Every structure is written in C-alpha cells, then in structure tokens.
Length: 521
Image (tube, rainbow, N blue to C red; front, side, top):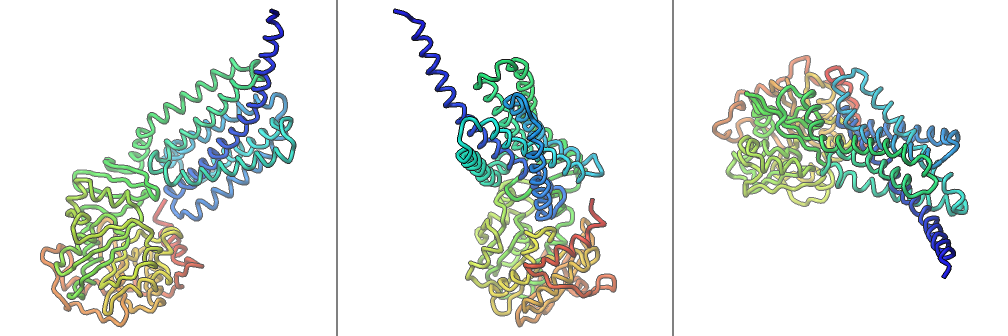
C-alpha cells in the first residue's frame, strides 16, 4: 500500500483543522484582551480614588484619558506592517508588562514623587495606546478569514462580552479576593499567555518562535514573581505611607482598610484617611452620641448609619433602656473586622456582638428609603463628604428620608467635619438639615487627632434640654458643663452663608474639597 498519499491526506486534514481553529483562537484572544483592557482601566480609577480621593472625578478623568489614548493607539495601528502576528505577540507581552505592573508601580511612586498625577495619567495613557492597538491589529489579522461584516460583528461581540465580564468580576471577586496589585499582575499574565498561545499555535510564527520564547518566558516569570510578592509590595508601600507599624490591611469592594499600631495607640485608616485613634476616639464618640441620648430618656430603638467600627454602638449600650440598636454599614469587611479582631473587640467592648445589636450590610441611602421603622435616635457616622458617592448621604433628599424615620420627639445627630478647617462645609450640613425641615442645634468639641470637630443635632418639633436625663456613669469627656460649652462657636467658626447640598449639585463636596485642599497632599 502506498503510504505517501495517506500522509499527505493527514497533513491536509490537520492543516484544515488548524486553519479552522486559528480564527477561533484569535476571537478568544479578543475576549481575553478586552477583559484585561477594562480591568486595567478599573484598576487605575480605583487606585486613583484610593490615593487622591473624589472617586467621581478620578474615574471620569481616568476613563477620558484611557479612551482618548485607545483612539490614538487605533490610529497608530496603521503604521504596523510586516508580520502582523509578530507585532501582535510583541504587543501582548508589552501590554501584559505595562498593565500588569501598573498597580504596584503607582502605589510605590505615590510616596516618592511630587507630581503623582502626571505619572498616573502618563501610565494610563501608555496603557490605553497599547490596548488601542490590539483590536485593529487583530482585525487585520482576521480580515482574510471572515467576510468584513462577519468580522466586525464577531470581534466587537467578543470585545463587549469581555468588557461585561471585567465589570462584574472586578468589584465582586477581584478586589475583595486578590486586591489591586495581584489583580493587575494576574491580568498582565493573561495578556502574555495570549501571546504564548499565538506564538505556538500559528505556523506563521515558526521563523521567530525561538527568539520570542525567551522574552515571553521572562515576562511571565517577572509577573509571577510580582504576584508572589504582592503582599510584600503592599506592606512596603503602606510602610512608606504610615508612620506606625501596619498590623492589618485589606482591600474590600469599597475601600482599603489599614490598621496601624504604636506603643500608645491603634489607628484606623480608610483609603489613607485617618478615621480614629484609640488614644482619643472616646472624645469623638461621646460627643457624637450623648448629647442626643441624654435628651431622650424614653428612647427604645436607635438607628446607626455608618459607624462600622462599633464605637458609637459602644456608647449607646451605656443606656440600659434601649431595646434595639440597628447598625447599617455598607462594608461587610469593616463590620466583620470589628466583630473578630481581638484588639478591636477590646476597644469597642464587643459592641457589635451584643444581643441588642443588629448589624446590616447595605447602602444606607437605599436601605433607609425601604425601612418602615421609627427611631427615637438616629446616629449618622459616615466618612467626610470627600466624594459624590458619600456626598449623597449629606443631601437634603437623604435628610428628608431620615426625618420620616424619626419618632415624635426624636433626634438625629450627624458628624459634620471640622467647623474650623472646613467652616463652609460644616455650615452647609446645618443649612441642608434645615432645608429638610428639621430644627438644628450645631455643636463642636476638640479631638486631638483631628482638631476641632463638628456635629449637628436635628429634630422635628423637638426641644433639646441639656438636663433632660442623666448621663451614664464613667464617661471620660462629656459632662453637663461640656454639653453647654460645645454649643458655643467663637467668631472664627461662626455661621457663614452656604448653598444647600442637593443631589443634582453636590455643593458640599465642592466646599469640602476647597476647605480641606490646603491641608492635604
């Protein structure tokens, strides 16, 4: 039997199968690189909001620069000639390295360079240009394998599906489970893997396969090493950012939580901003809770919004007449930390584990709109209104919802930033509460870690009396005398005219940025 025709037939079948598989592989590459490209964009926006604040501004500018740069990359793709597969493999390796190391590089440079925004946008722009080259290049590779209309349809279908996947898994899986550094390195490796698949599955790559293999392997080793040492990199960068020893750090879907410790105190930072020091937090939390609660001796049910550290709840539990304390905090990572960590359990006196306390993780803005209960006291302990997502929780629309949840004669208390440093911001909160139809009683106290800090009591048809009820025993700061003193505002903190913080203008966020701008990096 003549075996030569058989061998030729087998080679023809194999070549046919390979030719059929090649377009599928390239379309699969479209899906992977689209996912990677959007992940790099999301990483840059999230990291910028962590380090620079104001998530809306950061994401808006990052998206704008990234999309513009992709347009530049698409335009530049016309100049790539010769072996298109060779260009594609080079490009995937380069995208993998630049995008993969973007997060660790930005974290490290944040503490070393004075022009961080310039570095940030330059890196985002470079990544965008490289990602913008990918799809036009792939379309040119595939143009002889599909009809034009089918080519466009398939490429953009896979592109958009990949983008959808990235947008879903980034906040739900990647950030909480891997963190930003490991996520960027993982997806950088995926880009390099795409390059490797193209290198070894297409016959056209044989002339340069050996020379490219070493480059590809080196890129994968570098990314794998970065992934393995991601925690060390994160610890190093946080060591640069924080003066004290970092004893806990975790990225949740909503924020970066860091705990530091020295011989005197424990400190909590969210997205780099100090939230409390164990040395003097009692001043803040006593001032937040007791002016309202001592005026409500008949209080039975209290709502706490924010305050996932449980320190406000600790103060509320000093009132034995309370039957239920309901705490609503967005971040389960926060509340679980303060329910499990032994140092924090000691600090909040196991408040979040108390049988009277119900912990709910959810968006307070949406949750309050659906709630039907009435509360004698509502304690609002949100972070400062440094971005629009938090600014909505200081809006007149939200305060009107809170007013509906107040029982007759009840009080609402809001932490309201510094009336000294952020004078307009503080009085904007006061004026916004009044616009919601509430009577207000602003007050302030000195907290060494923060300086002068402001609060606002607000109620409907309620009259505050400093002697309505007794204060709990054992308080370290609040007394009948301090209750009176906290209501006095010297001229440099006295009331100034401001706008009302509404959802469609977010005036408070603008005031806050302008007031605090000279004091932050």
